[in-house]
Length: 58
Image (cartoon, rainbow, N blue to C red; front, side, top):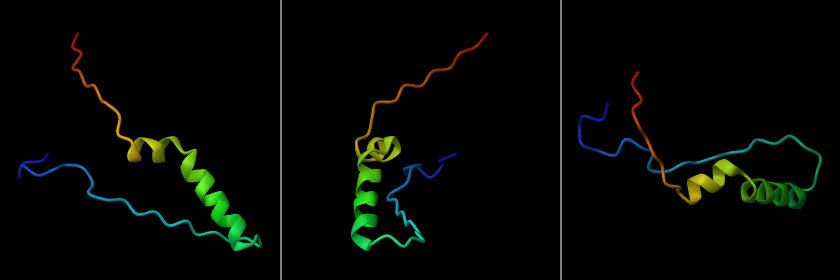
């Protein structure tokens, strides 16, 4: 629980991709960009969406 009246969420994220490949660095950079541009999680973090929450009781 957040009892100190501070944000409960993260302030920043950092991702490192460790790749073992014989591909040229240029191709890996293109793949990295493509992956980020088409990742649903990346998109959601970069472009926050509205969230709804409800309590359902029987």
